[in-house]
Length: 279
Ligand SMILES: Cc1cc2nc3c(=O)[nH]c(=O)nc-3n(C[C@H](O)[C@H](O)[C@H](O)COP(=O)(O)O)c2cc1C
Image 1 (spheres, helix red, strand yellow):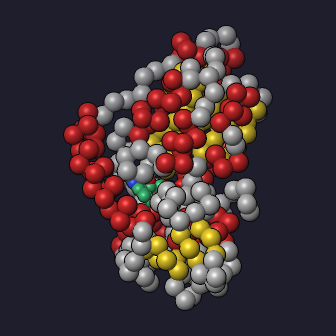
Image 2 (image 1 turned 180 degrees about the vertical axis):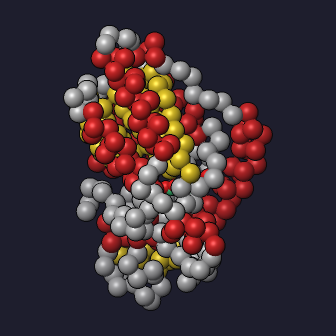
Image 3 (image 1 turned 135 degrees about the vertical axis):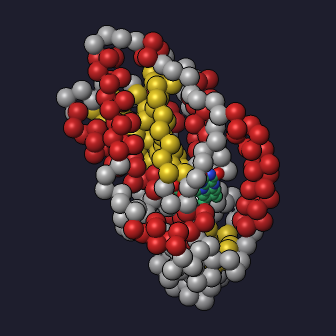
């Protein structure tokens, strides 16, 4: 049975969880063949090659980032396949899992299980003082052992074993949880975020600390950054993943004044390097 761990990660959290999951699943290679890809290195059509998809994303505005939604809108119809969904979040995911299952459901995937993992909030971190309590907590957090991901691994293996012994994927399917609170809190929260994010998107710039190393240009998942006449230019396709800001080696990229001199996150182990096509 072929299982694909497919994910997007702006700043390393989802990447770390995807790799942790892969490592755990590697203990069961007699049952499953595991592949790991980012959506930047995979076309929606390629999903047809796998029996089970384990799909991961960071929660943005109680949903997934736009880059994910565009990818999922182009999925191909399939038969007898299943999807596990996982997300990473700073605080709360609302109905993000349910919303992101919808495109899979439309194409015929059975929903198997899901996991929502609290990780340091990369939106907040970039505006916080390097010595703040939240930053200290994020840096001191132990990411080596993650019981929630271990439990999710067991759920995946349990289902794989059942399918291997003849049970049908659709019979093992459940409904994604519906959180009623999200229908109340969601719309005003979403509106606030939308206003804030649209305002912030226009405030990106690079300070004189920029060395024109081009890392931001190469790393941007939507090719929104370019260098024109010795100037870093930000287009209007930003998906607010904040990768350019957190990854800049000289901390030159800013959003207005709120990120000046503030903290930058390099993933749970401090070594995150995006794996995308242009690297
Ligand atoms: C633009 C933006 C919006 C976010 N919105 C939410 C949110 O609605 N709820 C939440 O719990 N976390 C939110 N976060 C925090 C991220 O979900 C969290 O830090 C995630 O682990 C980042 O994953 P990544 O490092 O793989 O990109 C947001 C982060 C960003 C950058």
